[in-house]
Length: 242
Image 1: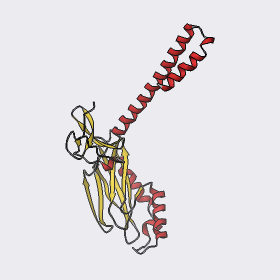
Image 2: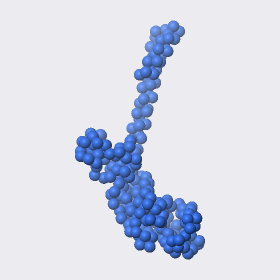
Image 3: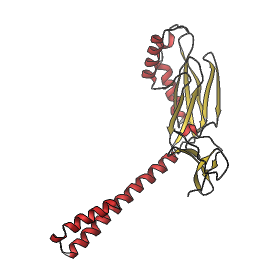
Image 4: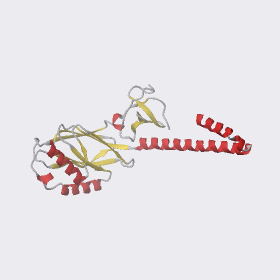
């Protein structure tokens, strides 16, 4: 309003050069321009909100103390299976057959990681790391093959295109020689719940609502930085939006 008022003053100041009809036309044109600009901004914000709520995620938590995990995944199981077979053919020679030990220097380990990622295109999840990757909303199941380097210096695959419901967290623990794998609903995947505008949200009867880890309609909103900070089963903190 302040900007519009200033515009009106400028136009009035210059009114001596305009007829009354020209002044009215100029004011209507200014109002229409600003209304169009605001509507465009509102449209962009609405689109961003829909996109943020529609983004689904695939999560990997690496609880191995000293070893990285390398992840490949996709929505098409046959494609991931074919890719896994191609990777098996690539990780030969020095980085597949060389001897190694847990006492490898950081330089050698880093060298291995860089070469492995370069050859395979896999995503690294370091020791104690957490990976969140966006997947298509139409993707109901994510298929993953992961790799870990063992004492003999070789990179071994595991999971082997195992299916994971989007939104589930795959947790890798134990040791490279004795891996333990679990899949659980520890975090929101962005389809039925997630993080938007630094607040957790969840689905409700008519659409979605900002969420609380307290009681329903508490108006105590759970804050977040990304989807992984929100968990399934949260209550509506306020009203349900269509």
